[in-house]
Image (cartoon, rainbow, N blue to C red; front, side):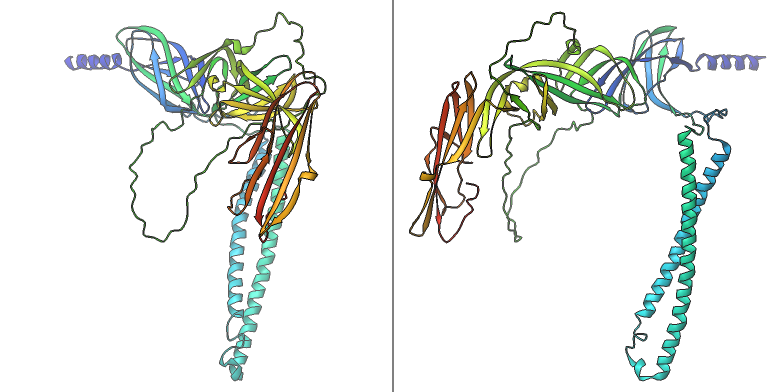
Length: 567
């Protein structure tokens, strides 16, 4: 009787401390989208009894990074453990459906696939035999006795034996090769027939949308183990990182005649292929990349010593030149006056835009844009446009021309204060007065304080660059040739307003002390002696004609011709 009581007590104790299970129905509350990857935040309510309970959260993406799992909970419980688990369901025998592949076709497909597999090995075996025979044939043909080299020509019996051996072996090898070639051809024909039939069956299945039975996908779960001294309930929040998601920045730059600012629209193309749709979810766009290296570099001592090996070479400092970013497809802007037109009639009652619901949060290492609107991002890897913000950029407009290369005059917008917008590198589309002009690339990492943006050509300014013949001459002084080049640049403003214009030209730069360059006249222009660029910056009144002279001489050895074609 005493033993029975002890057994009942033990069973009761085991039952009391057994782990309970509770499944939480959770949903995605918010997503932080990084440039690579995304952080998912799920929430669900739980209710547990006294003791230890395993709370299971299903609907988790297969792209989860288990190392990034974070758990928070409300209620009178203690979180003991959390882990990511994968459940592999038993294969379910599916009932025949109307769109399933008929058994006869399925059997024939399997038969053809197996037969093609066997054929590939048969073809390999035949080819191997042929390779051996061909090697034997080459050895016999290259043998010195067969070629008549050595003492075989001095002995009639040796010659007869060599010819007999050659005759017998070559006939045998050629007969075997012929048989193997025939076998190889038959196998190839059989393989082609099978591939053709297999293609017909696959096309039939595709045209009739026939599919085979699908095995259930593995189920990814998060299991949180909690302990409660009494029954408790609360809210559980899990956060984890997933791959196959991200966002790409895009920019729109819009200018108009009626304003001296450029409107920059900051957009994001959000995509994800995590296996779980994000339905009506609040998004945060972060400029951080969680997969980037976060370890600071360590500078080691740099020791110098003599190098005894015979090494000839030199090091050059690479200098990178940051050129002005221009539109790839500039269009014609103006055919009439350059005066800024009056603004269009006031449009009252304008609809709100999505950027009015975005809050910018500057963090220690990145910037995060909190979007206070729900978005649905399906798991199809398609890009979804999300409006981040719009900004008015301080802009100065001026005109620019390089008549040596192109007599056209371009309208340039000089945009400042881009570094204050927390931009990241991305493509930009350019519009002017609603017309598409082209595309460019914004890279704040390599950009100067001012960004030059080409908005296209204007027809209200004419430029002419011509050679001054009476001032262009050539003469010989001793063993030197002295050539003088003279150009005149004429700029006429046909607009009804004053314009600010930059004209650029150049003089040659000598890299040889025997070639001397002398500047005679640049008409108040500014010379960059390093690269030889000459720049004139003027404000031209309406209808005015400005002229600029560029005169320089080149002196060099008459016995050493140089290339002056570009002058």
